[in-house]
Image 1 (spheres, rainbow, N blue to C red):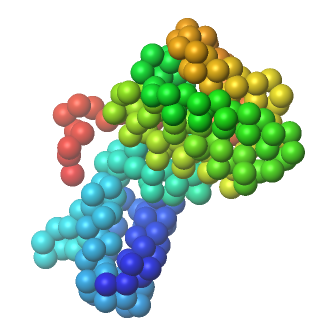
Image 2: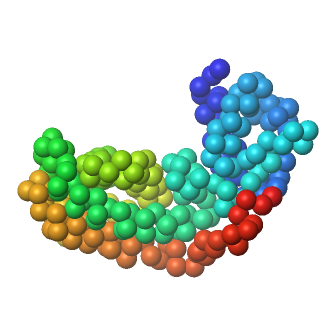
Image 3: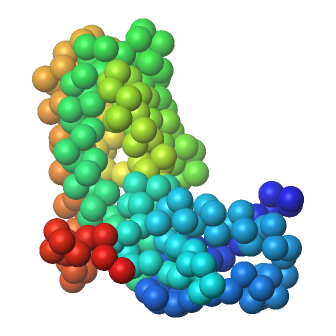
Length: 246
């Protein structure tokens, strides 16, 4: 099976579902997808299997492949996040991710001050200074790479495996913000300093200072992005008895 064709099939279908081009309840047939995507049945079958694992579709015997509503999607999957960031629901997705990070990252920073191994502590300090240099220089690609690495190390350094599993989601958030023009070419000097403050507090084992500086970063992030989601509706849960309904 061609990995490239497999990836293209997933991206094509996933993007169309998340954008609403293939609405909830829409039924697709495998043979039609073969013709549309110009791929083999095995590629379609594997792509559908991946989309099923993300909660985007379900296969119904003698019916076909049915698109599921958004409340069935896996909101933590990096692919779903990327597709949502590319669509009209970008603001709502950014809000959800920013609020999640605000709840998690300051705690992760405090935990990292207590639990991170020495190599992570030293690398965080090194990266924070490199981020400041890249930010001042307006080197956007380098800053993005460093920013992803910084926050990934912060989460993994916490010693909490559930926090560490948010690395992919944070990477997609930072990448999406950059790709869609929601990150400044020259970050604010104080925001760059806060990253240094987080790193140095973790390096010296000062948990409260690490948490405080990380909280400043996240609150500034929310303040910067709030206009992008001001008019976006929030998630509304369905009644408990209907969550699994068809």
